[in-house]
Length: 165
Image (cartoon, rainbow, N blue to C red; front, side, top):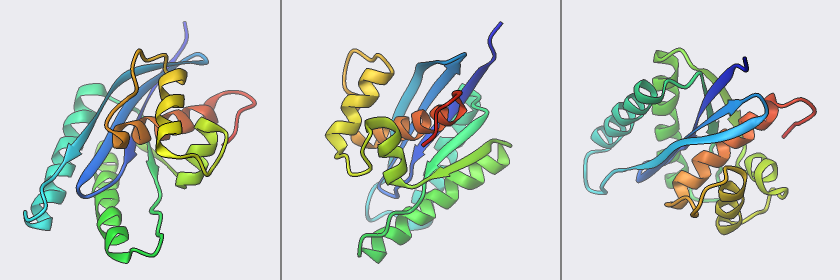
């Protein structure tokens, strides 16, 4: 009997934090669930981070992943956005630690390369390849959820014999 590994992927963000759960059974990837935690601008930052934390804990409790795959912070000149993303990422890491998940971290370019074959892929390409790799009948949306699924797929690829990111 094959062992199943359930992986939670997270695309951290303060306004939109994508999450996606995949199961790796033998060498086959199966989609489990995905979504996006959205918080409203104008609400206290502490409350927005608490929302992300508690909703991620609910996802972890519901789907029981063993591992978390999360994007590292990508800083492209917008330090305010990078700080907010880093805070959301920290909240996700705390939820993972509290839930005793193994954590793997990947740069956005590494995730894109693992899923699309190019570290410079755009969001539409990532969505398309996530749909194809997970045999979905539609593009995963919003793009934050697709990015989270891509993070989970990237990590799953590291567990397959002969595959690396």
